[in-house]
Image (cartoon, rainbow, N blue to C red; front, top):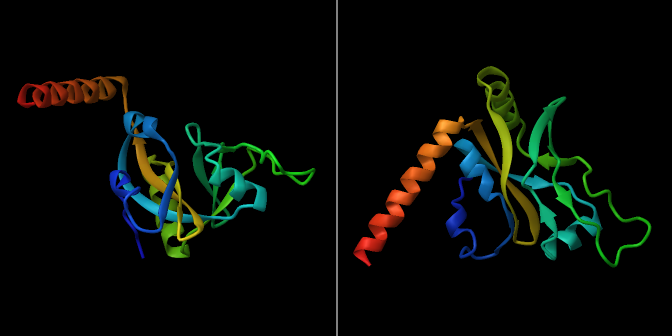
Length: 160
């Protein structure tokens, strides 16, 4: 079952609490599809996430041996944790259906897509990540996007 979420509506949905958002991703990548995946976390990671102490800007996902892992996502150590506190940059396993993982594996290998995290949130008490199947933008694409946004802002200002 595929779940498609819109980032703007995430805060309003019942039972969902936004923790972190990767705003740079939409600037640097063309987002083709998005998927929801559960995260395997340790106790201190969950507590740090609830405090909002996470950075997903440099994060990405890799598929290894039929399993998908979230890499380079920094979850700060929990302030009140003891010596069993977690490693901030450890690879975290993501929970998805096997057929979704195989489908993503084919697209990533075949067409040169990347898997990047867009948002991390809690849905009914469980930590979830919204993964995007994305293709990198060239510099001229980024400039075009910035021009289009500036034009839209200008039009909106003129009507206000």
